[in-house]
Image (cartoon, rainbow, N blue to C red):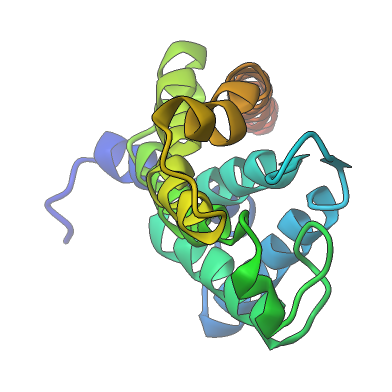
Length: 202
């Protein structure tokens, strides 16, 4: 008999586990592959404003990480990274080994950590409450900048902090807040629907 309280077990479930309770290796592989597809599709939403575009990728990363949990979310974004470098045109603007020279590639590397953070928060049920969900998604939104900004500066040989901030940080603050807010609205609403369906079966 498990010694873990039922409430603790329930809180550790992410949305994918709740919707697909019969877990197995094939299920996890399918979820990881689905996560890659989601981020790839949102990468098509692209606005070129400078060396690093504003895209829907970050929203996709938050959705995938929170829905799948820390490990599968990180696995999905690692798979996305490897598939894109292998030549799949799934990054914003293409793919292939040459993408290593793109100023935005460091942000893609940072997506792995972002998905893991979103998944970590979801495993602690933060995604079921708007306020906590927003905190988790803001942390996830910030993670890619830790890798992406220095990488961009290195590729472009930028040394002036003001110019680096203007190219790689400032334009993304408002879009990042908007994407985090969208994700923070989606997940509590999804969990509310799940609870309503559970109640209707009782």
